Length: 184
Image (cartoon, rainbow, N blue to C red; front, side, top):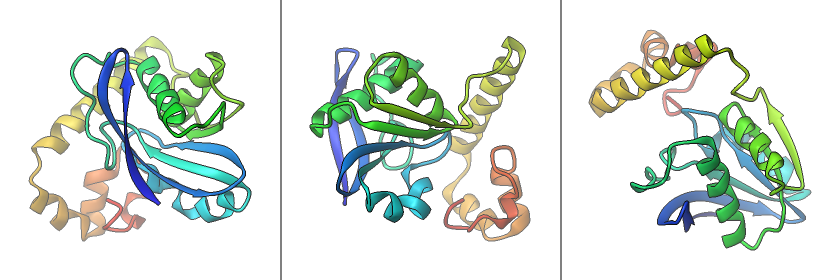
């Protein structure tokens, strides 16, 4: 089931988080990587839902979740506290979390803060040198800038060809030409 919750983060109300929830059992929150959305977990969602109450969310600014309101700091802890606030809104007490890339980093932070029962981090972000960090932030900042300025019609046209999919997603996905146009 797809839904949206409004939570307060860093004293700022109105942080909207889109999520889907499926299954029953111990709660398991799934956290996607940067540039992605909750549907990244669709291939395993049904299997996980056989044993868990699974909540897959879109971080603010990703998927169906709008950007965070002004006043919420742009930092790791804001993402961790957003996940915690959503869990509280859904009456989840110390869920298990699993995350990939950015989601893995947020999962680890949730574990450090003692807000979750267990952490599974798949290829977590954050293990880089200062030089690698500058490169990654620069790349992602430029990708976002270009994405926001590219007309939707251009994205649709490029996503229909393997070469176009390489142009659109080649810096963040392995074998981008094999991705479905809808996913791009």
